Amino acid sequence: MHITVNEEKCCGAGQCVLLAPDVFDQRDEDGIVVLLTPRVPAGQEAAVHEAVAVCPAAAIEVRA
Amino acid sequence: MPQSSPTALSWPAERTAGCPFDPPPAVTGLLTTVPVQRVALWDGTAWLVTRHADQVALLRDSRVSADTSHPGYPALSAGSRAMRAHSRSFIAMDDPEHADRRRVYTADFTVKRTRGLAPRVQSLIDDLLDAMERKGPPADLVADFALPLPSLVICELLGVPYTDHDFFQRASAVIIDTRSTPEEALEASRRLIDYLGDLIEHKVDHPGDDLLSRVAAEQFATGLSTREQCADEARLLLIAGHETTANMIALGTCAFLQHPEQLAAVRDGSPERVEGAVEEMLRYLTVAHMGRRRVALEDIEIGGVRIAAGDGIIFANDAANRDPEVFEHPERLDIDRSARRHMAFGSGPHQCLGQNLARVELQLAYPALFRRFPGLRLDRPLDEIPFRTAMAVYGVHELPVSW
Image: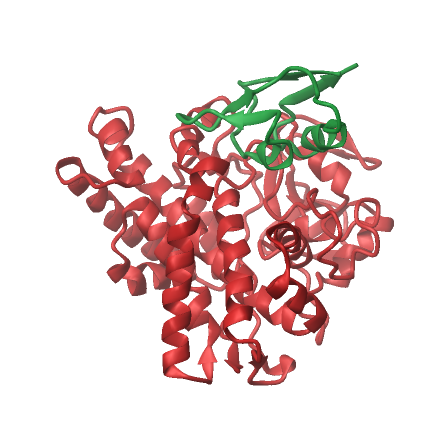
């Protein structure tokens, strides 16, 4: 599975970081999402899908 | 705003006596009947959206605007309408302007930064609990713990002197009271904005290690933002930073005391279990209980109705948090459920900026309180507790406790 993030849509809520801290981080200067890896690590599929679901700005996409 | 057809429900609706933790049944009842319903407001009508999926979809939809100066925007009260007409903060803007302004502040509220505040928050909690213990029972949990804690935290973060807490807490209470007249609300708002504007100007030459000093230097002194803009956004952060968390602490404690087994689990549980418990309490209580409000910029089809351009829309986040499509047995408090999809912080690009600060405070406050006072109990029957039904942030006016 391949992850993409949209920095323009991101509102820095940090929900993805809470759910999948090995995949998502936030820039120190403005809280905008940083993708730590574009591939979903093994065992993190559910957490990444949950991050997609709860992202308030719909800024995360996952493709097979 | 839609004006014609008769409405079945007045908004905000009333809770059932004896069920202070549950949303009005007239609202949750719409989840399975008329999920998008026209409701009567104090000054007109609007659409009430109850289902979780519809709320998430529309709050992320750029055809839905947060512009409070739009004539169709459904204001909560006359006082709220008067204040909102003057609002300059990002809460009343749409993207891309909203994103530009919000990003001035997001650095201070990231997961990393707010978690870094945990040791300081814990120390403030310990000091407040020490003072409560020294004074001995009974205590008002609101005045002695729930209100001072988030007030102290947001004061330190912003760089607002806590010695002024009586002033800003009183002004905030007037601002979020739906019974305030336009004159009262505007005056309280004006006093807060003047106070914060003076503070920001002072910080240009007397900076500290705080958010408002950074705003003073980077925004105000450079001419990027006006004094009014900075002060109005500071007002938003100050009010939102203490009212909401204070009420989550007090009302959450009141709810935990009705569920002693779950209280014990929070007292003795792992940090992970406490994290889940806080999400569940956010879902269960929805202290921002008067809905998120927006206005349609275009015609929108949803839930079998057509919302017309210019119509007001209210998103009943308390109903979404009780949507059985998302939460099994939503009426039950269950700290071990997955409550992550709750709407307590709203959704869309305006989702609560301070949510991770609130999480840190709540995750530390509940266990510390319950560990310090294992015999904590209400000092008055539940039906004699004064609940904040007329305030934009729900909770308790006071919570008499003993131990």
